[in-house]
Length: 325
Image: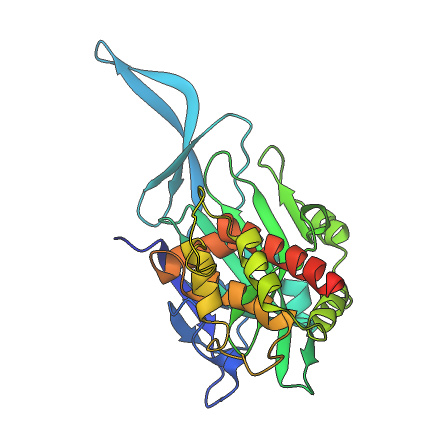
């Protein structure tokens, strides 16, 4: 099976034992210095190419006739990325990376990972925000990130969002307690990209993790009961069809069983053992590292696909069960 990740670079601090500077959870890409500028990260990630608009033609009785649509072509290899309409405005990779410039220069962020998925049709850049929080006397750290996703594919939107990572296991976490409160901006390609408008809409500030921190601290204090834990996994991963089995665990959907089975063995399981924080993180670890066909498909699903939705549901349900505990 071909990799969905076409190219990638990730920040690595030479000689560091800190988990934050080790190979990313998806295990892909090449290491680079953690002090690169956005433009330097773009080049190291193999993203120093443009996309250009060309008219599309068809041949009719030996004559070339314009179709009224255009194609988007990558400059590096003349690959056709997508078919686009007249009003479609491409966002160049340089525009996406330049978005981070002032934050990096001011010391508020540092470039973390960047790369392309699906033969360049999805380009991303992620910067580490200089804000985090810790649980259990500093032993369980959660770090904040800003993820900029730039699609070169018709029908896809530019997507800029806050996300987070639990350092001890490199789980990507959601910062939403429901779909409507997610910290993201989506922009279609009907007008030019306006970075100032995005920054104002996002309201980039040091308190972006505060709501999530409150939820994490709450989950870390609440203990689960086994019956509730099994019900929780079934809520997050509903079983397809009815399975009448005496063993409640065997009756679970396969992803639910996977999360249940790694509850005590996942990295960081000793931090908050028996709490809803442990239960929630067993779900995030399962979907990031175990469920699916490969590391790069998990990356795609965790950020853009169904696994992202699973994490939103997992957090919401964990809070619900913890409130009832």
